[in-house]
Length: 154
Length: 154
DNA sequence: GATGAAACCTTCACCCC
DNA sequence: GGGGTGAAGGTTTCATC
Image 1 (spheres, chains in turn green, orange, yellow, cyan):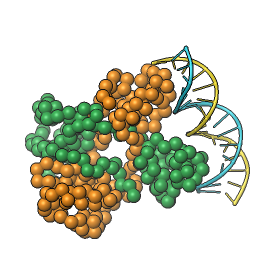
Image 2 (tube, rainbow over the protein chains, first blue to last red):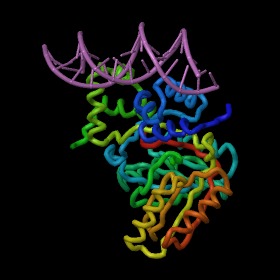
Image 3 (cartoon, chains in turn brown, cyan, red, yellow):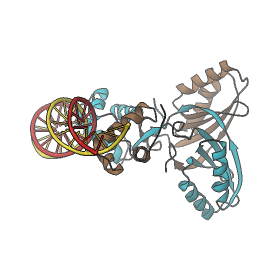
């Protein structure tokens, strides 16, 4: 279980981050291998968990969720029960697209995808503030996404 | 160019967000269609830009970039030239995985993927502080990612 | 939206270095 | 240990209904 990645593995990963539906055949050309060893490597990378999966990238704008809001949430008590409860609630909210537990004060940082401000207000009032233990909420609105990678790519 | 998405389109999108390498055949079963109309719909969704692409999800931890840092950057002048210059630099830094231009003070919010604190320091000193016009930098370190979607999923 | 056939791709046992 | 080959089986694609 030691992820020893050689030059070719890294190229495979790089290409699949660019196009996750590349056929083994096309990929093998790009990395300078024939299809079957290429497929074997991909299988190994998947089995080892280095490739966690493949996802379609959806245009949030076109789907009607063109507005993102970053929300910082503080809980009133830093007990496990509250964290678990909060995280369970977050997992069930489709609007919450990304969530991190931060150091320093047991804050959560969320990114919420909404249609517009009215939709965001609905999220705040009917979802987030209803979760037990939330003591403060602070929102920041971005203008534009400048970069959107999902992992380090060279 | 009007994204009228019916029930089946939405199901296709949902499934492809879960598994971006689903074959048209398997997908057609899940959405209750035969393979070819299913493929036609996918092609249409791609052509319309609703599906922007497909990417492999890579385990940053296993790749040696297990640490994320959120960095807020303020530029000293809010002129276009500086924004363009900063964004060009950011685009070229592989450590920067996500970047948003925020309202209120022309701040940028970045997520940086690094191996450890030493690696992060290297990023700060040899990359970020070398970009012209950066007037202040503030870093927050997360403990753990609680949720990781890439778009709203129901 | 479905069908079917041709072209294409994936997979696997097998061989090779 | 890894990479290549080829053939069987499965998938995609497209014209057609």
